[in-house]
Length: 236
Ligand SMILES: O=C[C@H](O)[C@H](O)[C@H](O)COP(=O)(O)O
Image 1 (cartoon, helix red, strand yellow):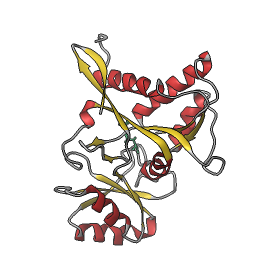
Image 2 (cartoon, helix red, strand yellow; image 1 turned 45 degrees about the vertical axis):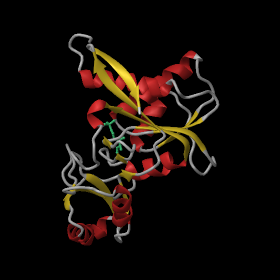
Image 3 (cartoon, protein in one colour; image 1 turned 30 degrees about the vertical axis):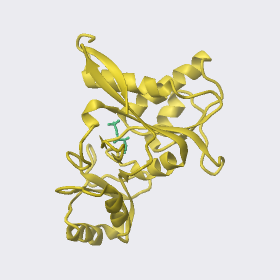
Image 4 (tube, protein in one colour; image 1 turned 135 degrees about the vertical axis):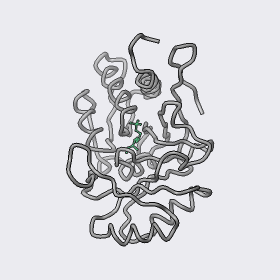
């Protein structure tokens, strides 16, 4: 391991690069959000610059992804201009053995769900700490809520047995505001037995825009691990 370098950062870099390696010239690419996909975006930009990759166009899943893509010279388009996405690469906060996910640690899950679900191939990039036996083991479920509905939505979530907490800003007074101008409630459940059902139940509460449970959509998970002091990438 490179002395002094954070092992988690190395795993994210390695896995971000492995995902970028799977992108082919001439494709439409969903660009995920977060610290892991930031490396994928950087590597895609490097490849375009060196000429190893040509004619890709990106669809960002957040303002962060858009800013990074512009910084690294990746041309962008919108869902109004294309009718399909070839490949989407995105991070996750938890991954279960069925490749179901919790996403939204960066409050971007609504746009991510739109883009990732449209892709012919959806690749998830994580470090090994994100792999869990059961969703909800360590991470709360992020739920994007229209601001005027915050109180009734939180009450409805409590009735479902969840413990909702309004996500607060860091270096910003008050709640986190999403790219859509909404708020995020992080919901801890004692146990999630049926992620598909919970995803639908949460989305049925009036005022909820989208939640961070992704079921049955992941094609491949690339997992960054440290082995013999070196970062390696495994597939699931
Ligand atoms: O809203 C954010 C996204 O769902 C991210 O993809 C997720 O939180 C993972 O981010 P990171 O790669 O920084 O752990």
